[in-house]
Image (cartoon, rainbow, N blue to C red; front, side, top):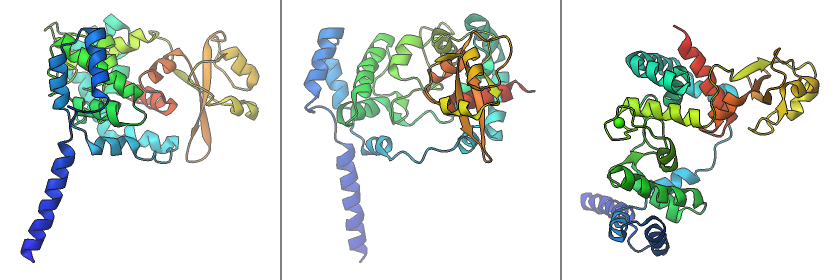
Length: 322
Ligand SMILES: [Ca+2]
């Protein structure tokens, strides 16, 4: 009896070992990938083959990304996942602890500290949850073996460029199962375009250097068009319920405030020429509406969701309170 149990657990151990040992030294897509990196980016062939031979295909990553999307949560439930006392408390402490960095970064990039702190809070709870997968495993698995792989294939290429050009160790870097890294969860293309060496030590360290991480989020927002001192959104009511049919159309700002006014929205004064979009959010009893402007759109460049952007906007307002 005892022996039987031991045998059974050995089988489990062996099968999990062979699954995790599947690597990328002879994948059918390998040669095309290597060829492109060598020819287009002058990459060292031996290096790239050696790194990929040590990358592991992870079933857990394919399972995580293919998990059937849970029913989309209504706004009032989604909001409560992120806006809770523990995260607010940690956010205020984060702002206080890094005040000198925020004073400087805010001046330099024109992005409010509470927006940056809200992003880092929502993404990783101030660095508590930055992901425990090796990024090489995540991007090789998704780039080579996930059916909808084009984004990840591109990010795998960017990852190799990122580690080479910044002197990073490709097998050590950790991130989410989708390859998002550090305090602000940058994917490799974002790292390449927007990571900042804030403290001037020659490294763009978004994992352990808080100054680099804060400045990088600020720079991301600046480059996507953040407008200093302009509003993000207005909470509005409808004087004509028909306006509802134009809500949640797209994240782009397709009409002006004055057009929204003629469609039936009670709009704020003196901003008629601004472009705006209308979003409907589900409350426990009924809905509410937000008329949103350019800065809201900029938040959706970080994560393309109107619920995400509202969470960041509301969280940043709460962080302003003493
Ligand atoms: Ca640095």
